[in-house]
Length: 230
Image (cartoon, rainbow, N blue to C red; front, side):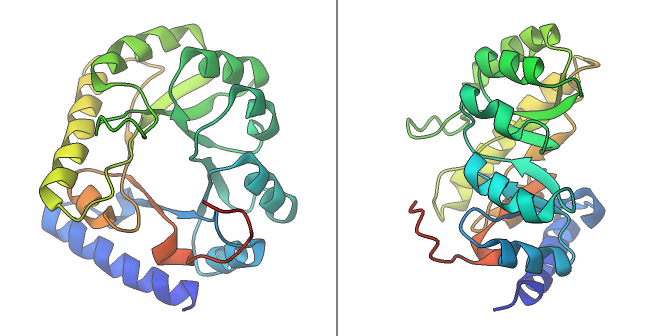
């Protein structure tokens, strides 16, 4: 199925979710996750009207960057190894996986611009998930004042892969509550306006619970056999 057709269907579902929750569609950023598709499929997404592209791996981002440069707004959404920061720092506008001070230090050191970072929170408590524990978020963000090239624009989480709507809503609401806590502190370097939560299977619920960024791969661009596994 063509990306443009997938996008129309997704936009319709987003519209319904926004109407149900009293929100505006303009407040939602659709991030096309292109990890498992070719550069040509990423180009198809751009031609369909997608503005934001997300990559989980530095290799994938660099490969697509060579052809697309700064046509899209790039998001790094996967776990980021400290040693790989230098490879992607001047190519992305958003990093969704800030989860430790050593990473913050490296980001701050490798750039002179202010990078929009989202603190990754392990709201579900699953051992397989990356991210800071919810009760550690406030302290962690307070320490980020030491890194002037980091702007904490929001929070990110990955919900459990389940069809249980009650579990999903609980997860997303916890992140929304954490966002409200951070915003109440009125920190200049951490406005925390963004909530990156929701993927192909649960983005409608995430939007109803406050998501401003949804990371959609399979439902939007599909998957291709690129020989990279995962």
